[in-house]
Image (cartoon, rainbow, N blue to C red; front, side, top):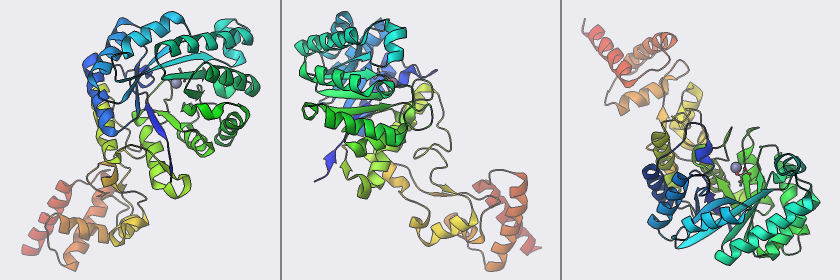
Length: 388
Ligand code: KIV
Ligand code: ZN
């Protein structure tokens, strides 16, 4: 039987930290419902100690969703943890997500603390969180730049305190996929009580590797992925939920992993997010961009018309999109035009198709996009020419 990877969505927390992606409470509740429909396992609803608005949003989301887990982020401070629990406790399944940094750079410059003091902070925080709920996640911020032996020591200690999920973030997107996979393997094999917790990863995209690192970690045994819709998030963003999911789905032969995601909700969810934050999805965005299922070159269009599998590794329908689009442009072939004309209801003979095809090539040199209206105009021109 395949293993399951839990999907922890942090669109409403780390995603909202993306410049210009602020959402009001009503918008966050709507997005939370959308995430529920999508089938994520855990929604990180916000950082309750950050502001009154964040606190209210997390509380309202916790009150309005169903059985889904709702997490609130908090620093490894008693007051932060209490505030987070105050907000998430209304959920049927609340989670406290507490974190502290474990890299030398962060310990020295952010905290001015010795590793032993950080270890104590982490233990104390988890102990306190566990006194409030059994569902506690601990994150070792900047884990990928931490000393592996110290990281392992912290992880072992917080599992002993009762943390049930251990998150290994690549906070600054520094890790490389094979190296990150080795870190996960090292922790799973070295930490004596690692089997008592679910190992999670949280990857940032500073080097464009967030999805690759997440997948490499899953291959190495991580069983929770922290992701955001369309990859929005701090700086260059987080691993994109839709990319991780469709990689696992399309290459099930390679990963042998199940998730609870309803893939047909991927496109609707990303489109809703885009409308909510007022940021368009880039056309070349993997999976959900407008061009992800559009074919312009003649060779590709011809292949697609013969068999979709020639140039499509997944169907648009599988992500909840209407259909593949054959885009007419200067690279398009005659077969694609013939198919487009039939689709538009025109029955032209070979000679007429050739004439329209020539006219389209001339137009495509002047105009980037050939719309259906352009094709229609050229067909009419052709019809008049024949009449004359
Ligand atoms: O990137 C990061 O390290 C985080 C943690 C708080 C999980 O967002
Ligand atoms: Zn993050």
